[in-house]
Image (cartoon, rainbow, N blue to C red):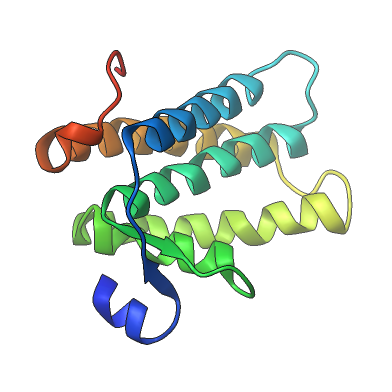
Length: 152
């Protein structure tokens, strides 16, 4: 599926962005990555912060591409499913990984404690850090005017 097909299906809508918006979104990502590593945090919360970072990174790629997810049901699902449409098919594997993380996060937030293992939280944090790097490289190559200064 393409971004345009997702617009036609009602999952996405065209929407311009700005450097200021993207700068703020990266600030949210960096806060979530920082918070995921705080001492004394439960494994569930570590996982949740890492998940939020990945979701915002998917959002950044969408916003930079000129789209946003329509609000409502399946907002997180549609955001996650957009990653291969923005960054390219080499990132399709992330859709399954992030969808599993979405479900685990929902369990941890809404249903029970100790819903995830330490290994899961560490792996998702790794994924978030790698995805952040990939988004920056992709933006530098394709949307450099929206890439905030000083990101590494």
